[in-house]
Image 1 (tube, rainbow, N blue to C red):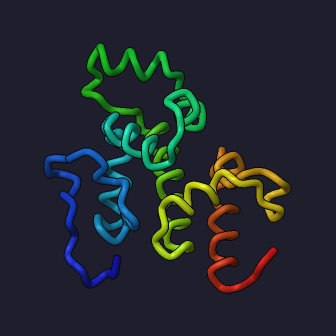
Image 2 (cartoon, helix red, strand yellow):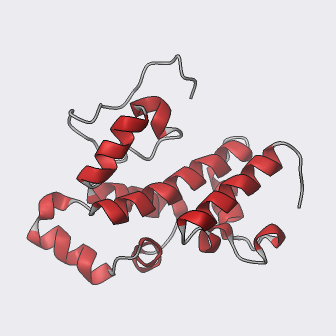
Length: 156
């Protein structure tokens, strides 16, 4: 999405709808400050569900990747917690959403191809899949660097 296009999503103080932050470029739509504010407030559990579906992962798989147990997710859904992840888990969820949309952009808008690419071992990542390599912030940044290199024709 281009910077001069109007935001289609609510600002931090507006009502959220499911998948609000699972857009191609959160910092363009919200501005970096609003995206950070929303993460600090905790993302709605619907964002977890949306990304899980987009990545075609099981609840257990995505929960493990962001460092929360499926049992804790289930308890948060039942007990309330306003249906939100805590900031740490929200930040990790956003890392995977960001990588997904960068992969979609790399692969000319093909979401299925991006899903497959994220799950395929990459030589540049020592044989790890991009999803596995991105389990830390440093690993996520390395996956972003790989995507940028591929966008510029630097094959590794």
